[in-house]
Length: 398
Image 1 (cartoon, rainbow, N blue to C red):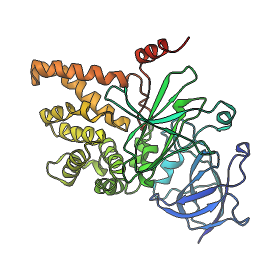
Image 2 (tube, helix red, strand yellow):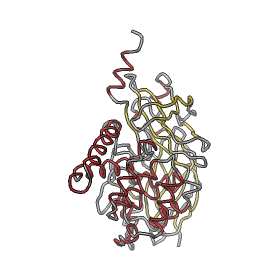
Image 3 (cartoon, helix red, strand yellow):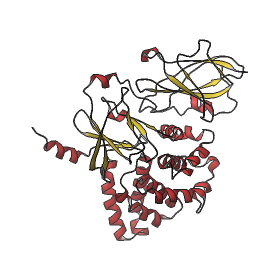
Image 4 (cartoon, rainbow, N blue to C red):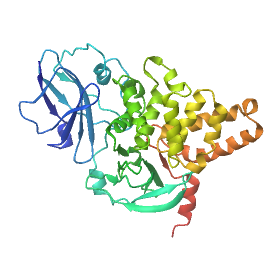
């Protein structure tokens, strides 16, 4: 017995209409509508759902809700998620309820919980400020500019569209003090991306990946969302499907692999992520070998081998990082930092002196970027190193 769903958003947002996607319990899109929906509401069968909306000003909204089994109607308000906030890890949070079989709601109006980093603050302040300049550049392993690339422009909503014909790089802009800020542009020959960097707070940037599953996964990789991600039905299969398409869509494949490594297999089946010669072993090897321009593949592969106890092989892979550059995603940078730090501490017992010196030099170079990065965001971002900014500022005309 179906009920009627009525959607709304806070009046303070000043938006009267926007397209809304309705996702089922498996996070598959089951319908699309608009805020200017029929007055009588939208027919939905009983069950757990999520609603996602992208407003004309670039703001994302997302809310989880339940349609009661009694066939009663439901009124749901989509809420704006704030960058830097965390989804409460409590037993009554909406997305936890979304995945608890048999959960019944006593209320027709359900409290919404937005996914972390799904949105931006209003872009009105951007429009009032002097326009920012953006460029897609390539950087080396230490975050220094290798080539200036090309200038980028934003659409009226403040989004930069980067087509799939580009190689991965970094979008560079300058903060109010003139210091550069960089955000990875996770694109490949077949995968585009969109990036928005507010004028008032570069750290509140947003990135939309082309693949919808990969895009949703990186939202969950924010902060404390891993526990919530593990509750999604078939998350392991979805991540595996992304990795399976590693040759055609390597960016999405890397996201799928990160989910597998960070969340782990369902029911604690560790053999699915550590066994030599299994599909995960073979596919991460292919991602690393066949996409030499994507440092994420190397970081993932090194982590797979390290978790299997093959530390010599993992270290030899990490030695190749300078030639590959920086990863697109912060989990890859974290994998590399953690493993190299551990190997440096164990160099006297498990590695020789030459390795210890080489590891130390590699870490020093890596920390140049890492010390200026925000690891709470899944897409790699960092501020210009202080010494580079001081040198560039000193060379500016007085």
